[in-house]
Length: 256
Figure 1 (tube, one colour):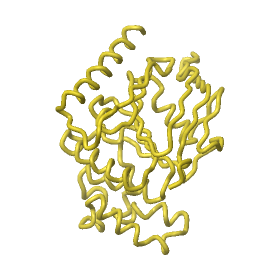
Figure 2: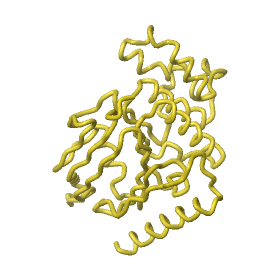
Figure 3: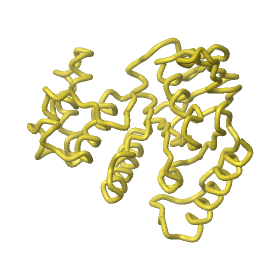
């Protein structure tokens, strides 16, 4: 893959909302960040700190009042199949089988016939091959979320945006899908941007962890995770990073 595929530039971004009481709420304040092509980066911070707002801006689902966002030097001006979004809930089409859900994007782009074999490949990668004809209500939450990841990645996006996609899963399933996500990331070298409240998840998955402040959301600190993969969650170095981030999150909340 080209070295300049999926890099993200966030320049002086501000985003303000008017709430139901007519009050002005500043969600993001002067956010600046460069995300490298093929990087796995996590945003973490208190609830309501603008993490999802920032993800929506990268996706092109929202626009800033001020500032600009770019993918590979091209300004983001709306949604694109080059940026796939995975939500906390799987959001699979209930009338489609698991196989049909994974193929949905290819069919929408009218490239299903030439890419049909990719559907089988992703079913194998995600361990869903024997459930290809099952419907979403017939599989577990973990399987549904694996299908959501496959549906997003089969379109070969430059960027995969992950909005707490594992938050509703039990701990064992969550760890399993974290490993599956890393496997898919290594195969495709896709830039991955994760919003999470789980410090362990951020340390386990990320190249860098971005710590955000409560509203107005700003970048307080960026922690580079210098650990080899696969990572041992019980190692001294892993625990050190976890404690460092927890301490910074506590200080951020106290400052507020």
